[in-house]
Image 1 (cartoon, rainbow, N blue to C red):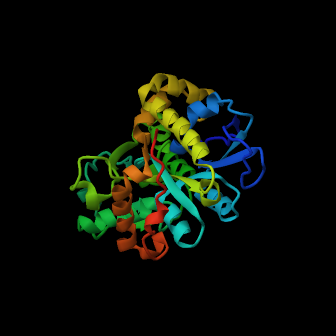
Image 2 (tube, one colour):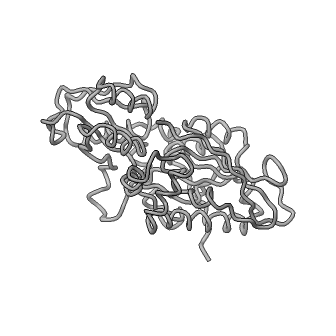
Image 3 (cartoon, helix red, strand yellow):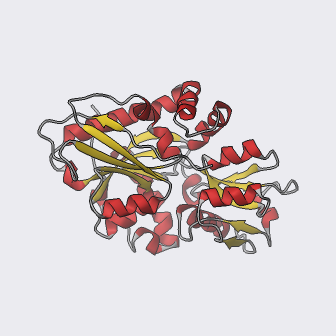
Length: 319
């Protein structure tokens, strides 16, 4: 099941504001899945603030959001952190404002006898997107744990394709992201989580979450003159993120209402696995850079051949 695209108009604070596309519109590009979940209260009840519209543009593929960013068509955007760093290093001038999603990747199997990764020797694990977050973290995990005889396969190009193959019993092992994980397990009781995929390199050094998977970004053209506006959007988004885990039952109802999940039971299972927690980038800068170092060390081109400079992180202290 693919989450349907949603376009919502929201009114946002500004006086004499001119954005990148239209004077009365701020555009926020985000991804289906946990990113859409994190915005659910803003989608459900658009705040009305000084007659300025915000248009949510939701796509299933990060490349669609990336293309709009490269054209300067978005004022805010949500992307995988690694992709955001790559774009920054290639001159696409968006700054990292916050980290809202902290790890949604899981290794699934429908093979009853497999209970740990050591039993995957000579097995094939399916992933989508060679060089993607899931691919690099999984291959890095195999390397760190000296698991040398596990094959990776990129025959499927998206989460939905992997999910469909699982349901058709064409594959038995795959790294998949929420919400497909919960949807799959609700449809087939033999499918289960074998391992949550984490940034193995830094797990042992901290008790806190270190998987800065997803970034909330601001267009540099916007940040120059509209700090108050950015603060307002950020605070409203932060409140939406908090709502998802503070009120999971009500969140589940909203997710079903807007067609993001088929029923509240699946939504309630999925919400904790989405690991939504809004953190300002300036507060978790070290964690973000440690996370990006994994990708730069393992596959330098994934971050654009270098780590981003300090000004990749946009400092906006909450009031």
